[in-house]
Length: 173
Image (cartoon, rainbow, N blue to C red; front, top):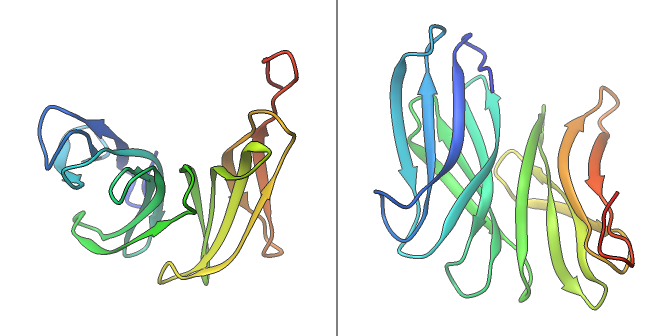
């Protein structure tokens, strides 16, 4: 993803080095694609990085973690050098995954997937303030496998969500 300084930010996961079985791996490249720095974030459990948003003073990274049992959504807020400012875990006793984040002047929209009810996997949307505190959550979808893949904020303070919805035959739309 292109950053505000014209460079690039890349987020994924690594099992080759870091803190544990699998960690978020964040790479910052300059405008020419040259490595500026790289960081890993995680625990001795499994973490995966999926989405990134650039802010004037750093980055917001989303993914998920298996620390604490099951899987829960993870939001990591860093400064411009990738140092962690804070992190938040979101979820229910069931599995929860975060795949995309977008910024607002007063917080974040975060999209993913939750298994929080008897309908199976549902698309999941969270709204937080700038400290990552949850303002509200919404889950939506069918009785089949659904996931919110991306989210973009709109000028009126709302958002647009790109999602995939499951069908009874196991395919998705």
